[in-house]
Image 1: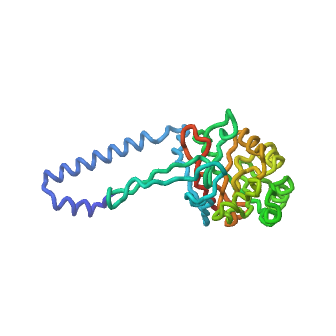
Image 2 (image 1 turned 45 degrees about the horizontal axis):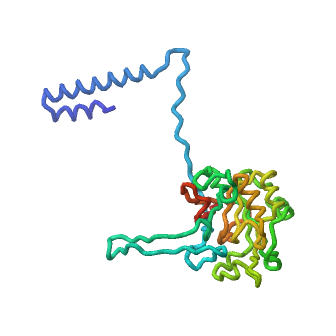
Image 3 (image 1 turned 90 degrees about the vertical axis):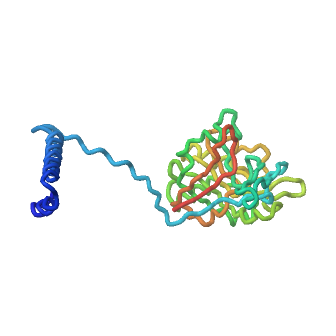
Length: 289
């Protein structure tokens, strides 16, 4: 509201007609404001409507973000019998005004998602996985020392109980990751696959007993490994795949850098592909804490 001196100064610069129009406008605005104020005031004894709620703030505060994804190239190890990614350049910026390539790739190559449909006739395909299930508290189990001695070692019930003794009960909706140190072998395909003279593969994974416990006793949404499979390398019938994916859960294989993430307290984001009918696909895996 203007003081009388300010109004007088403003009116002194106007003609009589302009001043009359100005004052009329001011009175009209004041009258409308008073009417609205009166209309907004509840009668005596009435309860005023509560103010409209503010939209929820969804902020992500993190001091650390770790990329748990291998860079994918034709040199990255792949399951025997499958072709690695092939990239064909289609456009060059200097020649065409933009840069673009064509990819030819199998769904299960590099750091990748296994959707339930991969090992379940009725399981959802990649694009049907609930978004909320792809963001989860992360528990990391360090089995590096045992994996050096026993390449076919598996996460056991004892490993899970020891983790909970140190860090507390696994929270519902969490993802459990096996850090075996196998990601350090990714530059050497033979070492990463662990192939022996008979063609049998050797690398760590989860035991069926551990997977059953996580499925039925702990409400875990996903398994993560830094190897080629959530089953151990020499497995011939893939019991963990069948059990875990058959229950509608997801898995991520060939994770990288799990050693940069604390054993408890981080959250993992699974950047799963959203391709109709996909059994999985290359995935950007991020952890933040």
